[in-house]
Image (cartoon, rainbow over all chains, first blue to last red; front, side, top):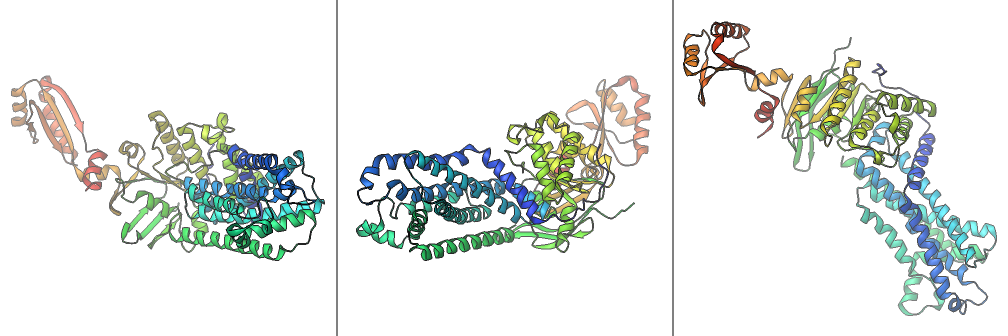
Amino acid sequence: MISTATSPVHTPAAIPITVVTAATIRSLRTLLRSPALLVSPLAQSLFFLLVYTGQLSTVGETYLPGGSFIAFLLPLILVTGVATGAGAAGTLVHQDVSSGYLDRLRMAHGTSAPFLAGTLVATLIVVAFQQVVTVAGAVLVGYRPGALPGVVAMLGLMLVLGLAVALFTVALAVRGASTSSINLVTLVVFGMSFFTGFFAPVEQLSGWMRAVATINPITYLVETARHLESGAALEAAPLATAVLVTLLVAGALACVLSSNHARRNR
Amino acid sequence: MPTSPAIEIHALTKSYGDRVVLDDVSVDVARGSRTIVLGPNGAGKSTLLEIIATIRTPTSGSVRIEGHDSREHLRDARRSIGLTPQSNALDPLATPTEIFEFQGFALGMGRRGARERARELVELFGLGEHSRKRIAQLSGGTRRKVDLAVALIGEPPVIVLDEPTTGLDPLARLDFWNELTRLNDSDPNRTLLISTQDLHEAEVLATDIVVLREGRVVAHDTPDTLKRRVGERTLTLGLANRAAAQHLITKSRTAFQAEPRAEDLVRLALPEDSNVLETALEDIGAMAGAVREIRLSEPSLDDVFVALASR
């Protein structure tokens, strides 16, 4: 029986967090139903883990006196995994923008912010899961974690990087960029991670690679991650903090500017 | 019963740089009507509907939905509208139930309210067997039903549909038209605003038609009035032979004319005065034995479209 009420439904305005929670659940569901988005970053990380440790662990341990090559390599593998996994946020938002679904939600709620926030949270949950599975995979090939708080702190740092990557991809998606443009964010972070002390400490690199690694902001994130995991002194932490804060602020600003651009051009 | 228009558009203009998409559009959409916006590609139909639905902002001018100005009282205006966009604006990986519930959350419903409303809509649109399937698995016709149902979650008094049956097969289209007519008939205060290029769809659904051309309203009236504006009804008779045709032309009290391409056909243009038709039928009755064929035709919406909407 069709309701004959024609006055619009006036419900008390929902507490925003309720809508964010619903949006997070919805985005999580979408991610779980998108095997490519869920599995690819994980498969990539595990693949690198296997290949690099299998091919290079014997060589690597020669220039890491007393150290574990897997432990040395793991933060970089986590960074590349984060770069790929966090990009899913942009992919989800792009789908909603191009189909008009985000417009529909914005019309219903008044703003699209809770839905974008839900997508970010859901992506970070999945990235955290992928990171934990990667660490578990590393354990299977010989990695022996340091103290649990250190490992958790390392994963926390990766999640913050993941949030920054996700913010940039969401900003591009809101602005109406194509999927290939959105994927450039992932590609840039992924590519930059190889110009760090990927297989060897920076001080053991030479020539242009050492110069590039020295100025590469990802280097300091990786160094700090390694120090957190091993319990060593956090010499690179101030620079790593500055890098992360800069990336987060820039990512958030990009989202705001993109939203304003989209609003002006409607 | 309130008689104010459901939608009031005043001096609406939308331009992107030098390109003017809507030019000084002023239209009132009657409450309870099924108003069709007709126009060729690029006339501005979708832009007009999107501005009314508050998805786009006008360059100038105003829109009022159920008395709420869409700029000053945006929230109230939005709560008064349900939109079914041109393409399926749905999450392809979600089920209809999930989409309805989520839309309910977005509208500010609590969990229980959203679930109840989702159940109502599943039942209302006969989506029971599809309610747990993902949108990507549904047929085009079923997806459009889901799209329409989403527009109804908040029970808005105004439903805006942008070319709702594009891409549907004839049976699915007919089913959809029946849904729209049922919605409109079930509530005299519910207004449907529909854009289409399908003249048959306009013929079936319209109580009012707005004709857009190059961003301007060139006509706004009932279908019958628009048809009479572009042409007149015609009575065509096929008679036994040329002599019978000539006899009728000569003896009739009305102005039958010979049809140039067929000597046994005659034609009478019918003005609004019903006496002319009555007189003609009396004259025809006097020579009924010679009549082989009788046909009453009137301008169609195709004629309206060609005369008003095309360049």
